[in-house]
Length: 319
Ligand code: R2B
Ligand code: URA
Image (cartoon, rainbow, N blue to C red; front, side):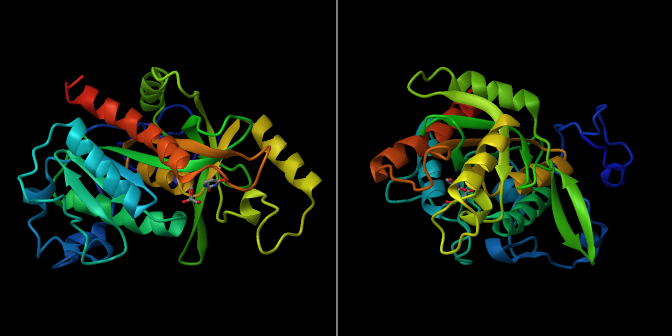
């Protein structure tokens, strides 16, 4: 793994491989320009640090859980209401705090935020910036981030759970490249090993499915980018596809999805403790199409949710 000295800040703890060690403490942003804003409108969340009392609304947040689909993240919020024994007054419902924006959903259940991020890196990146600023303005401390997702597995039974130890791009490079002011900046995509292992221990308690820690390949496209033969275009053969997927599998890639690189890179840059836990919905060494029934997919998607819920309950002393 290469070192990335230009992204280190004075005082950052680094281990020998050049990683920023994730740490507890205040959620920090590293942008001197923010101080000069008279108001910061978090446009896609329909919140503002002037129009809303963000510390009153959010200062107790300790766990931020992201997932692609708005509906899934609503269900996760409802699940957390039960898991944390939160009382919602009769006649009241959980509110999508960002309902005015129509881009993402944001629910708060006690110290847990449930946020949708849409599909792909650009969509995740926007909401990640705004959630980080939100937590910073709200003066939150000791916050952990999770992505609960779906993915295509490699050589594992669909329905298995993969906890990401490191994210790589479609060229197996462990950093996210961002074109910034005409330059390509590379942001390393490391994750918190300890958190991975804690989640694996919880996941392994459920014997109904297999759980593994592995590398995740993150692509910019679902079809050609993930070596599928069933897109609207395809310029490679079935043999090329299988050779590529086997090669990446041999390099320790357990699953493929579309946000891990950005999630890991942004969390790493913010020195946050974070983890990515995905169910697999297809074995890409066997199939491109996802053919499981709606009910089966729902059950598989609950697996990462149950693991993270249990972790949160443990952290809160509820287990
Ligand atoms: C997993 O599933 C989505 C594509 O179907 C994408 O957001 C991802 O990472
Ligand atoms: N999500 C992906 O990005 N790829 C898959 O194969 C399945 C879900």
